[in-house]
Length: 225
Image (cartoon, rainbow, N blue to C red; front, top):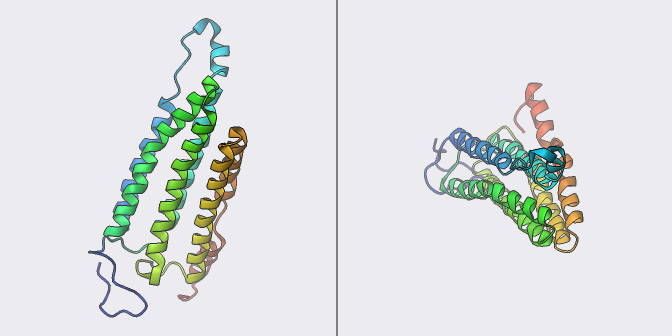
């Protein structure tokens, strides 16, 4: 769908506009594959005579699995938050989203490196930083997509007002600082760095106030802001 020429307050997107539903559907598929691959990195113990001990000793794999799965889950949830309010996408959004998906598909490898380092007792600092940088790249791309879409409201739908759009970008920017802090701490104290990144999980699942308020007004029959 192409916007009417000369519509005030919106600059022309780069290239033809496309339905964001197809982008969301493709992204869902890539994310689903990524979280499925996570569990394939957990190998059952070879020594079944001491199976309980072997299962306990896999705790680094469980840790990497849970941490990475929940973080990818946040990516999935907030990807929908973002694309629920994007009325159309152009080639810039398609490119940025493709790079985001490339990063997400890399996360099972980062989780495997993290688990292996803690199993071996060596390289934990490098592994935590490597894992954190992979998620930091995802956070950067989230911010880039939303900032581009909301600039002059060029690609935003009428489902969200300016306050809601600002609330979303504040949440996305917080992710940049939080994950970066955990990554830097991990370079010194790996366990502390992981704890900081893990603490980000429950907070980031909280609803975004600006978007929720807007949704309530719409359900209540309020006019466009």
